[in-house]
View (tube, rainbow, N blue to C red):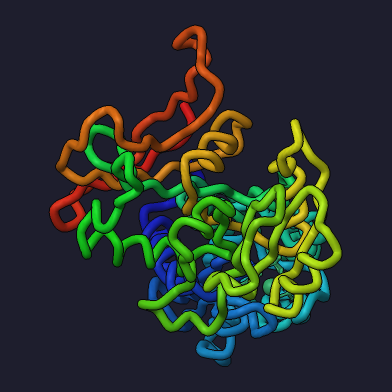
Length: 359
Ligand code: AOF
Ligand code: ZN
């Protein structure tokens, strides 16, 4: 292994710093940087917000002259392009850094190895791949948008232990406890967009906003609404409303209420969800947080568009005539079932939280 235990220690620190940007960097990635000389940290930084300096610049400013001859640990390859800010690779070269360790290459096609070659050409030892899995896990959405041209879709459900979200009569308040609901606020706060369906809008009139955290931005709210049923009085507005076709009158009323109404291509008369996700990626959406009813949940699941499922389970049972989590066409064999593997399991207040990834 070309990396030492000290390298890992400093990269861990850089990852910790990167995580401070969890709620704020969108649409940019969360990135941390540590500058080390003679085994001592001489500068640290993390990216806080798009349009402001990158992690490396903050660390270089903190280190000042001490950056000369230092090793830079960065959770993402330093950029080589002029975006909203100038290239960090250049700044590292100008500061006289002698070695750069990056956790992963930047999947952004504008960079994609360009930062590493810029450093190498300048005679700096540049290495990639230390704690790469951890670095990727910090930015699933950014990586997904850059490599798959679609956001990372994190679907949240809250149900009884027997898998129900509401009684047959619709009663659903409250299944999970306060701690679980506060935990959901964290999920919303890290998302670039919050996606729901018109059924949920009509039934619950949710705001789908971030209340518990001051993140200095508001995730884009998106309603999948094939037949444009969202009322102009809906609490979720302003939001992007994706429909199949909009009558001019309904469109005008919704737009006056702050909606952006978009006509999407369809699949069986419903909004093509893959096309909607592609559109969101084009707009810089990295992570989509889904909080919806059984219809949209089921459609996303059936289309294979769920990248992560966060399931809150409350320890109660409400019986088989209550409402379920996923509505989709009946399966003929278990082989057709969407299968997940458990990535994390913990108790949140009196409830359970399961984090699952497609198997
Ligand atoms: C960040 N923060 O610490 C690093 C990034 O428009 P710009 O200039 O902010 O460039 C954004 C791109 O820069 C981003 O997509 C990623 O490819 C690269 N590296 N970005 O936001 C950082 N190191
Ligand atoms: Zn940069």
